[in-house]
Image 1 (cartoon, rainbow, N blue to C red):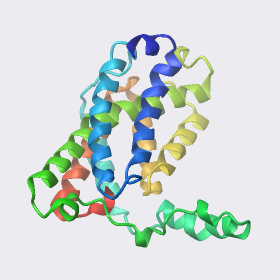
Image 2 (cartoon, rainbow, N blue to C red):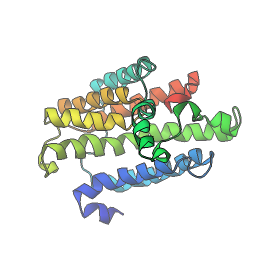
Image 3 (tube, helix red, strand yellow):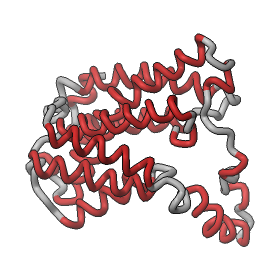
Image 4 (spheres, helix red, strand yellow):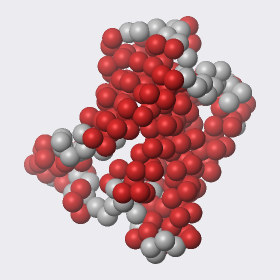
Length: 243
């Protein structure tokens, strides 16, 4: 795997993210329990992917700073604070895009309506306070804190952002600011989340941190802090809709 990643700087930054995304798409496709078991599987695959990327992707190095802590905390507060004040991405799809698809006979392309979806909740699936439920929760907290940030930051804030600026993205310093790339990357990152508006604002904050510090590690740390705090909030408050 490392040899394949070394063969191309693009493959090294895109392939791990695509593999992780493909495993995410498999969650829930093989029965309700597969939502949880595929998450566990993709987390362990993610560990391997990050390990394989480390010697190849030079910018994927954790960095700690007070700016990263502040942004990580503020993004979490924002994410929770604006929830419910705007429609989710699935609601927008159901309201605006599904009628168009149905009019041309492609109603099967529409996903299940959000109100009919069962929230991601290991306690409901495996038993309240069961060992298995807490194991799944622990794996998810680990994954969102230590695996998701490096994979996503390398893809979005390093590869995609700099590729929009110039095809030879490695020749673009990480601290370079470019309006089109700045906005486009944040929007693409945001619409990949159900909470699309929070995702866009989050993407702007993390990319701004990369431009400010001139390195990727602070954004990785901020991302990890946001995800960890949000995960703690989910478990503490039972706000499973965020997961």
